[in-house]
Image (tube, rainbow, N blue to C red; front, side, top):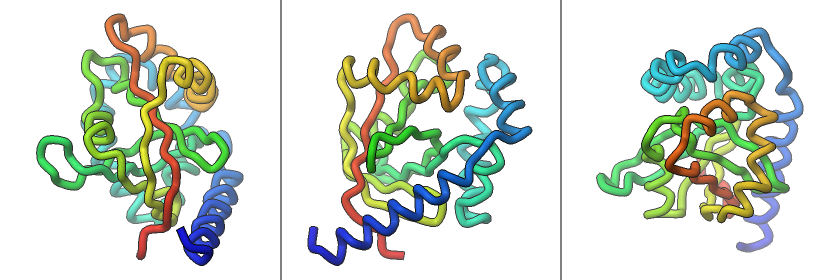
Length: 185
């Protein structure tokens, strides 16, 4: 990466950090923390969230979703492992330095979410965080990385612990998304 691209990426990550600093507790977030762990909410949101959250993100320039929910959230843009088509998934994320961490609990249901298979097949992806669109390289974390970073997700959204308890035959896939550039926009 040349110096101009590195500077552009550094500035984009600083803007993301400034937007993250504006995220705080909200009434909607408090409600989600209470009802989110339930199986009923998971069943409904698994179908509605992937439609509503990207729409809300696009309509508000990425500002309202995180501030409304009180969680750090991004849109992960992958290439379908089977279809080869673009796929967008709204996800809560945690940070590790400049990197973004995402975890595929699929609300504690039987299967891994499709976006995790997409990243395994094609680790090059993009994320939209606020108004920033970044190119990322994904790396699936091993068991030690999962154990190290899981508490970050629990502290952002305690519903993750309920999802983990439902999973008796699999460990969720957790990925590190390392920013490698800024998407032209």
